[in-house]
Image (cartoon, rainbow, N blue to C red; front, side, top):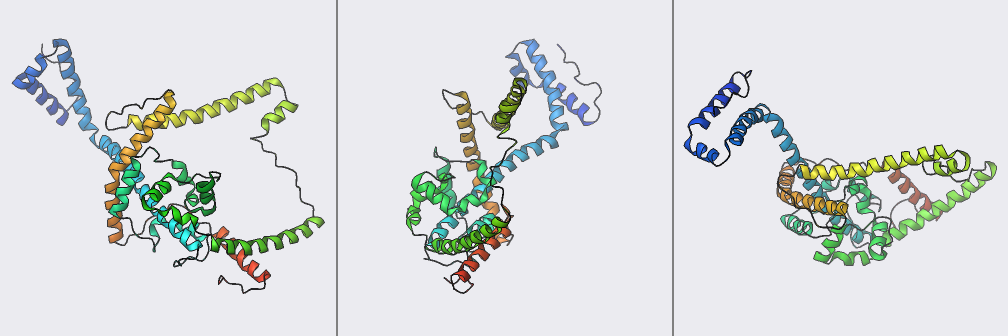
Length: 366
């Protein structure tokens, strides 16, 4: 059976490529022997499709290369973020020592400054740089079942240095935020968990002056409120209180429509989460075995997290090489969050005012 020409309207290199493949299929003995292993119909279909596909691969080579590079860039970006996590732990350990007044740090005047430094963690001048030993330890961490790559941390960069909440979480389990798994792993490897046992001497001093300032403001506000009473009634939320309002004042049809609205929107959020996980696996560069679990959703989540850890581990060395190159060239790193100068200034002024109210100099020498 003679192979029909797949595309009759191609010209130039496409036509040459098609002609060359037809020639190879017809006369290359090794290829002919390969096709002889299969039914004639399927072999001819394969040849036709192969010619068509190969032309497409070359026609859209730039697009597919760019998409492949985008996937590589994603994992490299994720790996670079892990270098930030490594440095966040180093800064947190220094914060514990600074609060215990064991050390001083250049540019650090207030405990709030650690929150600010976390926003540009890779440019923190007094932090020891990332080392190959750090990378090796982090790779080991990524092989552990507790390794957490929850992206929500990146939406709350201040949390990495939220000393009060993290200390409460680690010691009592009742903090508003979880103690990072990497911090726990690092402590287990280094023994640095003892740093959390150090007293918060500096923080207690700051809080003493802040309390003086707050008490002064409360008394001032109380006088103002007597002249202009403040509305102390609770806040009515159009989101949280809508159902109660409907039940009290509207009809059953409105309630049903509202409940359907909430259900569908919640479903969309869940669907988007699982679609993201499925897309991650669809873009995998090799087959990924599903982790066994009685709940397929949890099995999917575990599978995706395990795959993410694998890809990030593979990209860590390249991320570190880029980091070292930037350091050697004196290139600063982009911020990973936005500083809040307003809150810092308010905290600073509050302490100075508290010092004044306590009959002390308006400075930070305490």
